[in-house]
Amino acid sequence: MSRTYTTVFTVLTTALLILVCILFALGQGG
Amino acid sequence: MKLAKPRVEVRKKQDRSDRVRSKTAPRSPSLWDNRRQAVKRAVQGAFRVLVYLGVTIAPLVLAWSGMEPGRGFLIDFSVALGFVGLSLMGLQFLVAARFQSVAAPFGMDVLLQYHRQIGYVSLLFILAHPLLLFVADTGYLALLDVTTAPLRAKMAVTSTVALLVLVALSVWRKKLRIGYELWQLTHGVLAFVVVATALTHVFLVGYYVNEPLEIALWLWMLVVFVGLILWVRLVRPLELRSKAWRVEDVIPERGDIRTIVLKPSRLHARKFDGFPFEPGQFAWITVGKSPFAITRHPFSISSSAEKTERVALSIKTAGDFTRNVGYLKPGATAYLDGPHGAFTMDRHDGPGFVFIGAGVGITPLMSMLRTMADRNGLRPCYLFFGNREWEGVAFREEIEELKGRLNLEVVHVLSRPPEGWEGDKGRIGAAVLARHLPERYQHLQYFICGSDSMMDATEDALVHLGVPKRRVHSERFGMV
Image (cartoon, rainbow over all chains, first blue to last red; front, top):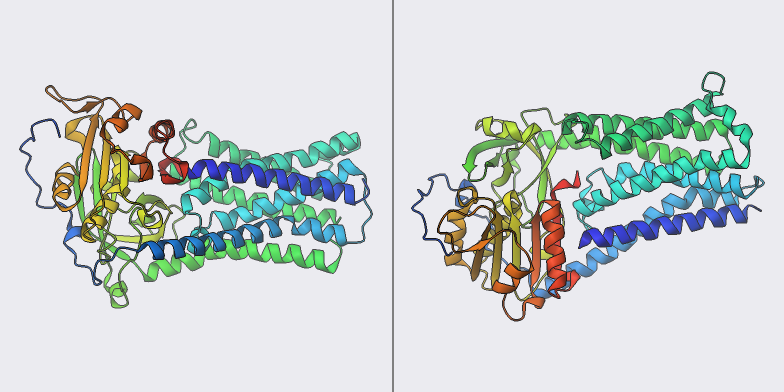
């Protein structure tokens, strides 16, 4: 079942990183 | 066992690792020990995750606090994805570097699964970086013409192409019939090319890398990447060389499995104080090659964790390295990198254990059973062992013997049973499990090892039977 947890972690990490990238672009005045 | 027990000669070389005496008295981790270790691992794991995420977004934090003006949402978003993609790629060296301290809270197989998954994510981020630039300004398309493009663009194209090739080779390795050893070599070289050219691209573009802190961060990352490569390819092999092992015996088992028994070399033996591991863990092994050889192979340790002066690994002869295992001679030099993995009953306490294995998947389970026997374990345990044929059931005689030392019930499941077989047939599924498990089976800890499809099916069956997911543990052979 650790496989499922790892996949969930990967998905959450990806979502978080995309959010940070969007915030960065918005923060730069975009 | 429903079939009359055949008269099989019990081999004299059953498993020499079992004959080796442990220096320490058998011990079984107490419930308190297990809980304390679990909390410690959770805290360590959370700290590592936070550091990992911090390093991943550090370039953006510094760029954001820098003085450069923004260049529009799409371009800044594209740049951010490029930076994060590169950080993720660089951190892949750390994830895959087999640091025991990094892997300890998660287990190496989990880490390698994450390595593979986040590899796809970083590919998407890195591909999105130029694509968004092209959408924002079609003028950027001219940079794709490598004959006229500046060096910074050539570096970007080289990095992206190398990354695409790296991912393609990893995804289609088996279809392309690329040997594991060749793949491991190309994987390492391509990964280095991807990160080195991408870093050069970042510095040549020079945007968001002008402030002293930004420069310091990227230089630090460069030092870390190079340091990781040096550690993996130079420092660790030197360490392994000083702790060489000798093949003491190669024992043929049923089911085309060979057990390699290792003892410390004469030099290693001087400072050797046992090879501590948890039952169910695995190690990377290099045999008959320099410790600097780029390829190593992960195999489960099959010997008891209470007998640490010898280490036995049981390997199915299938392809590449494993084909040659049968030809190994006692005295050959081996290097052992490990132990690794979180697939161990020592981390999951419970009122009893259920071991479910198929074929060579029995090897980590044998380590657990042997360890339990050496610890005089009294808790009930169940072994469901799937095989094609009765004659190919590895460790069959020893499993029978273990029934006398443990509170163990064994269920053999054969997909091609012999005539007269009255035991379970087919594959291990919900029906077989339900037929043999005790009343309060939901409280037991479950350990599954076999092919991916077997483990998927078994996990589904256990979920179907209402076993909580947190009590189901598996190890994937196809993780690398």
